[in-house]
Length: 184
Image (cartoon, rainbow, N blue to C red; front, side):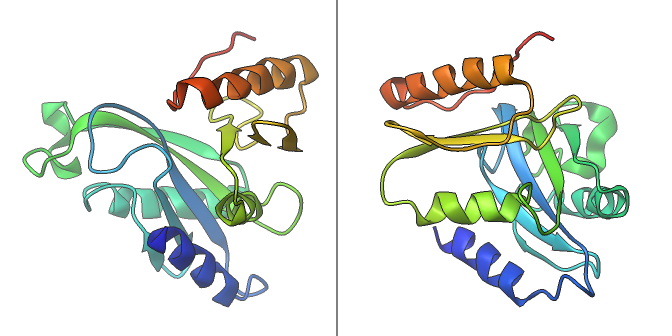
């Protein structure tokens, strides 16, 4: 919770009229990783960041990718495979030995601001679940719900929104996060 508050506090201090901002989030891990899904890092276009997505082995590359996202305004998911010998610079020998998917989203004012969703989630006093699309044309869109009701639904595909919302409801029973694939 301390890191989450630090990210929100850092964002509040950024003058978004002068600086571009991105939010990197670990969305899926296969194998070992220093950080679990949900770990976040706030990045500004001057190269500063708060939070982390790994034990230090991915942050430099994520910073470079975040600059691309800030320029394009389009979310991007990067897969880091630190199990491959060709990725020596990504953490072999440092404890990173897994495949890690990181969603990097541009942060701008408006309803799709991922910091607003993150802030809402951290301020909730009851258990909540959030689903984030991290590939395809709807990357970055989210659904946030409590066990009783949907708080936020950004998904533009209503059929997908119903399926995801139903799956989120089941998470309150299983209490296990997961990355799920939906066709089409």
